[in-house]
Length: 253
Image 1: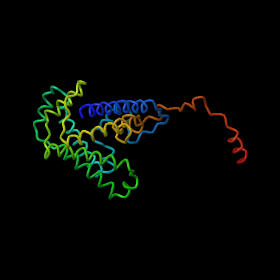
Image 2: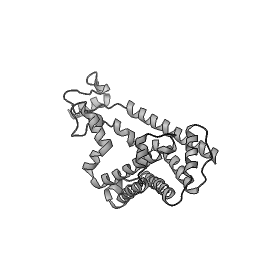
Image 3: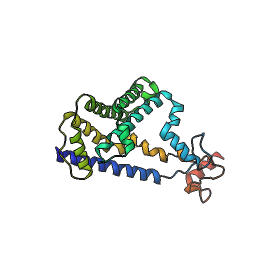
Image 4: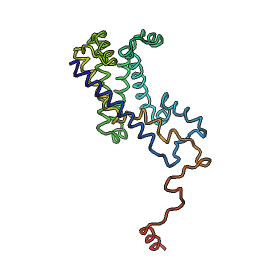
């Protein structure tokens, strides 16, 4: 099992890194031929980072459009952040004092995540407009995240796992010297689900985490009069009319 899950772990991480980098490259190399900032947008270049920061930290546009979904999403992301902070000790031999201090507080990130995810799942079932635009992958992601948060909470509060053995295995993965894999069933399920999420991440809607920074409706300056963006096909002036276009003009005139 140690060899199997070590191979699966490295494969999932490789798919995650290569997939995310490929998507980021695609986002960055895709041209934005039009000025399409979503108003109210910053009118100076210095205002763009502030707007992006407000979206990343506060989900500002979502707050303005739907506060119930904003609340559910924000609760989930806060729980996810706390979970990541509490899991740092499994992959680092030593930790910063500030993070170690945070870890002394008894927090329940898995339960917070479950609350936000449960509300998001419920909204997809009871809100007609949200249910209409939902597809199977949306439900799959929610179920997968709920399963990860649920198994993590079970491992923490009900089915205790050998934390020292878990850390030895994770530290071994980081050092490319895997130690014995923990055999507690709840950890096996939790770890397998996390690997599935890592491998699926680049191909899912979770890539909005990176795509937000490349969205022209968010990262463009609202200065279409001061600085025009000319599409490559229009740089040489008006294109020559095609035979079909000439026939259409003759027929109309």
